[in-house]
Image (cartoon, rainbow, N blue to C red; front, top):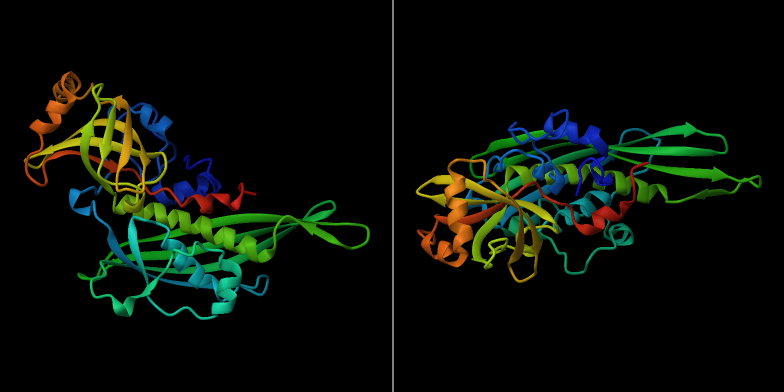
Length: 342
């Protein structure tokens, strides 16, 4: 998933808004900016690096309460009151978290009309939960710019979102950010006055909102990187199994860093691409070893000479061993069906 190609992220401008960097790494050791990396970008790095804020303590599902408010900036658009609830429910598709609604959703009929959700996605009310770890608050304002073209009009919908994440137990604000999602629709007028458009305004607004939400999701993924213990290694050492899969928040073609941790010392060994399964595991395909790192080089040699014995040697204590940690958070597959950026 390329952040500069996937439409949900609203292009390069949206990426820069989050990570504050001008470009992707180009074969050097600059710190990893907060974005969702592609395999090509990680392959281009000189050495293997670990994402910031990673911790084996976070390799479990966290409970996240969400409260969204969506409104129209002016009279140019009409926002369905059910959209706030829709976005809360969409967050439940991020398997990294168990999502709870922070307030009741109104307008159930309208919600059902636009939702088209997987029936398995359900939200409990936060009042029924005692151990919520985090709260995500988001305020989204929808606006629209109209551009007159030769025989058609282009309506460009913008979803500007202010969001913050708070640790409920410590009452600490972990981050406060802005995100923008943009979606355009064209309406063509015929000689008879009829108009032809590819999408309705309702769908266009929803699409812009989901694009902003994708940036929010990626920020969450970078703040709370998920991962798991490596439980087996093939004879070649190039394929590994990780004890975390789709339901633990690992996305399709998720990029991960494999690292060895022992006595509090973490040594990055390789970049790999994950293929998550529904049984709590992922297959990891290693494509870049950290052979230019002086501490990693002898460990990699030991692993490649006898992968299975290596894994036995480093079972260690609960927090010691071989692990993999993810970069960012890929969005659910159906979020990607919103079409290319206009």
